[in-house]
Image (cartoon, rainbow, N blue to C red; front, side):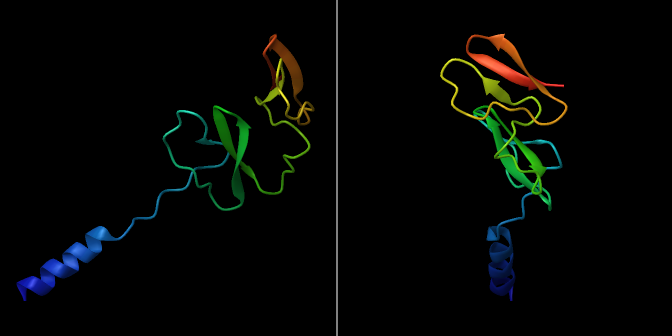
Length: 101
């Protein structure tokens, strides 16, 4: 009886637990990020830059526009340069420009 209880307990403890999903518009990845990487339903984790990925609606076509606060220019930058509606690509330094409202 005790053996059955112990084996059942060990089996339950070894089962993976479901990770909590990351909320809408929150960070879900990037260099140094240690939190969750699965977005809530209807959202997907999109790379904004090397240091920041964000849960954005699946319906948004991020292959055309740089999201707000994303990198849009700079020396050596090879990504998208057109900011999403309501944002403008603002020069920060020779190596970094960012989409800002």
